[in-house]
Image 1 (cartoon, rainbow, N blue to C red):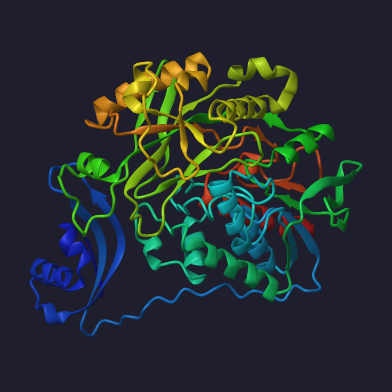
Image 2: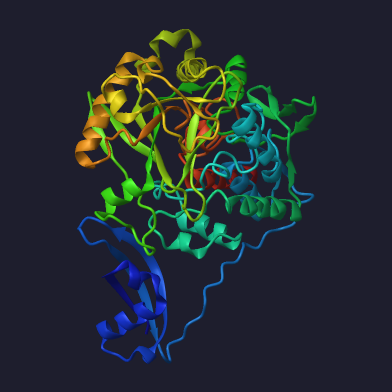
Length: 520
């Protein structure tokens, strides 16, 4: 019978199959030739001691024990060309996985996406990086695959109680992701590899009878007697259906405004906001691994910090080892930052959002906007950053120690942010209480990570799209909107997810709820 072991080994042993077999043979007191195969079930890094170790959970098959390579297959999808139609608004992870689940359940998804397909988006990303031109429908947030496609593809989630994380990961593998995502403690596909996977998901939806319509923006939801009847697009087309999954992402402000105008119940939601900090990756490696040189067998080091400062949580968010900072504005006249890493995480810099928890009372000066108060607060900071940086996609920037000491940086070193930077005292970007918390928080971060607080680090502002500033409330048991029958708010844009995996899980659940409702 195969034997399962937990072990801690050097990075060299963990990276080399022959060395690992030799190590296990000695542990098990058998000949190395007796070991037929070793499956790695889980892998994580332990850098708490001076010498870094790799934690492995392995399954060992000796000669004579039955071993078959795991094959990851897609579900038995049905042809749904003539099945009942369900409109899915948005082709991010929530929308795409909802559509796949609908197909599996025998329903026909009609997916509408305001942006372009994954290939078409690339031209618009170049335009924002090089020419400072923001396409409101095609950018880092909008387009096939949503924000995750071209802003990292991290698959780590704390949402295991919400659904079957393994199922989502296995679907990604079946669509072409490396099986390592099933093993690593912090799985990651990479911005360079995720687009092909997203394209393959779309083609599978179409192959089995679903529809995917690009450059098709929702402008209205048809509602009669508090029940959905269908939608209207910016082209003036009407698509009829009595079940709609609304999976538009956390930056679709026009959707929140449309719902508010129609008196559809939405509510303001707290979120987090701050800056994106960039360090040399070698510096983060030396801090986290306690070494001068990382070596070839260790990945670029991540970090995670949480502090309480003046009664507020301040924490690292969406940390990107070996990554770059990207411009993620969705409208002209605003500046927004985010970060991403390629699959190899081989860039010279590391970046992370460093954000502060906001409270509903922080939006009091925007109270006249009702449920949109948080969104308007968010928008005001992004627009202020745009003005301060010269009304381009350049970003306000400051060296980290200079910021903590209220000192304008005389010069900003070149960072990974392609549109460029403008030296700005960050206190001009944020309300006073946020600037003070950030200053004190960075000082506390420097105490936890010796070397983190340095003028080698540059902070970029703002990191403002951490999650939706609006929640679209729904029934706990049915996922249907509290007020409008047939409307299923879904994913990050509805306030019910926080990343690719949790959004995909939420999309699947909405599809399942619709299938169950149609049975009754």
